[in-house]
Length: 184
Image 1 (tube, rainbow, N blue to C red):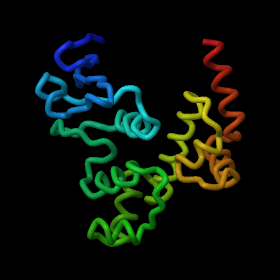
Image 2: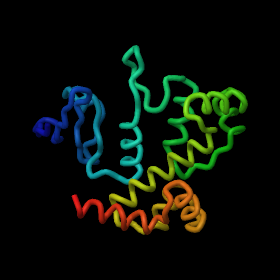
Image 3: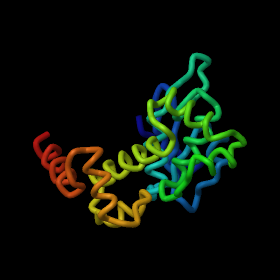
């Protein structure tokens, strides 16, 4: 459901879970937005990085206690996933994650494998490639720009990783997805 509210100069998007405001960037004042009854807001129009974070956030899960987790109910894994998803270009190592999150690399590897079936860096690669695939479907930005945005400064490395994950090149993926949308 969409509705406008004059007092906050924003648009209300409601669902059974969220009461979301679409706010012009110049008016993105959290206190005013929340005081108007919204549970969250998005600066509109969206920037590519905010769009990526919001899409990934919608992939979250609710725990039995009703507390929202974007990625995992395991607190350490949740914090690390949030950190890695904030900036898809950021290069990390498991040892640097262990240092930053006051843990050790064996614990982090074990928890990620337990939670996702993947070690942390493979999980980050999957996250990056899925974000890039979404952008390929929804934008006409160049493949090189999308590759760089998702942490692949080399277009060749991006194409290789993308093909390994999706079974086709980024260009072919974009064409196939555009064809699917036309058929629908």
